[in-house]
Image (tube, rainbow, N blue to C red; front, top):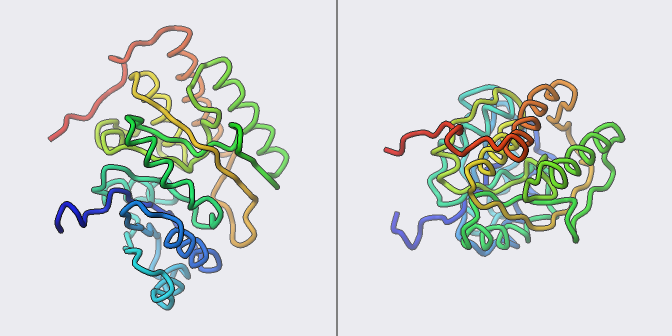
Length: 252
């Protein structure tokens, strides 16, 4: 593949029986995203109903390149890490399979990354963002965590917990991920980048409770992992933990 034809953005979509959502989402991406891109569909099993939904509707996806990537791990965590390993674009964004309303912010996210940001967050809580229809327990925990992380721990984003996020290649290749489940890797990479002093940006995003399929988000089960990185963020700001405490992967 020539440099001019190489995707500048890999859009990584972890899926688990998202057949009812995925075509609308991919059509929105094909319609809205002008940055040269490729979509990586990271799936667990061959009988996932997402796969035939895509193969039977490829003509509706325009020029968007869609590739299937079999999860080499387990669950959402394994799917994302497998997608990171398959990505070779300068930027990779983890994108929700049921999100057909935020595709237009992918180009602005790439633009922020091109200015030097290593992470660009899709923010529900900055001006212009919104969160609608969230279950009350999740909403309380999410809003409280993000308020304290922004105002007290001084993370430079209003939305530290949203898994919809763009990463530079050096983030996914140079920072080893210690988290082992769910979407906890996302806040881990964020707080480590903050400690390293790498730039973090954000753009406003909308969020609506999904209409079809089951969410993989398990707030109670993953809470201990989130608390670990919550404390890490405060240690950076108040205990002044230095960048040297972040373990880095040698670049080959």
